[in-house]
Image 1 (tube, rainbow, N blue to C red):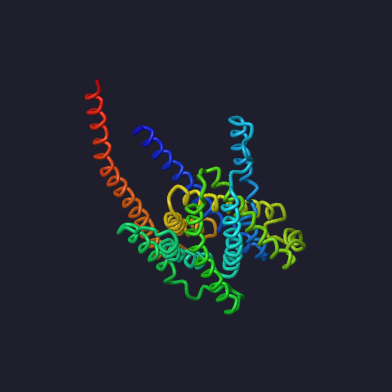
Image 2: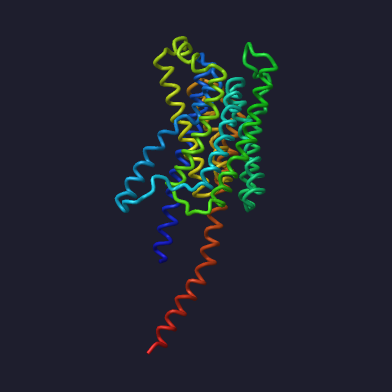
Length: 358
């Protein structure tokens, strides 16, 4: 039994690491490709928000594989494991996600990516607050230290962000983009703990297949929400014309939007996976710690300047990340030390009972 418990714990950490990697790919690649769309001539905000969740059909591939595996074990296997309670919860969160997608896309379209990333990083404070209120998240000195360091790192990035309004854009559009991005950060800080709360209130056994179904439903309703916006804004008619006028060419236009959809799907899949295997707080921390990496990638691909404050932010982010996981490591050791005496006592009692038996 002890070997099985260790194996299960090790597998959980492996799956958590895999989901962190998937989240990192989506979190860094998604904003960069979205920004590429805008700086090379793209202008459809509802369309870009649609792309953030529109890649959800990809999830049908692993879900189909899981269903075929269940069919081999039992002929009456259900096509979907999700019960109505979890379905409606996922649908509601999906609609909120669609709104958040639009708010974020509007911000990326109107303000520089460095400023946008700075504002989005504030979602960690919102995540920590809502995690405490909704799921009674327990904080340690290490997790609080991580939140403080990552938040300070985000603030450092904004020390020299004044006067970064794009050329030709008026103050009204700039500040509206600023407000929209801040709203997106606050809303997503609410969504992350809400997903964790939904897991806790699901009233059914959770596994990773079910997590994929949750992601499918959330993205479907987020995409439906953005589709309504696209129809109202006449994006469907404008996309072919925009593709022909795109600075990189029509073919690369479609490559950009396809890559955007795939990368954002990695982001959402990584988020729900990290929450499932750990917590919404860790999900928020991973997103925030990747902020300086996004800045580095912007320097490489878009030739943005790497000011000293970005180096300081990177240092603080790494420090905060290490602080969080060091705290988790110490907590894990403490929990193991507390359970070992109880297990030893049970083994001793078992041997005594066996010795007394005739």
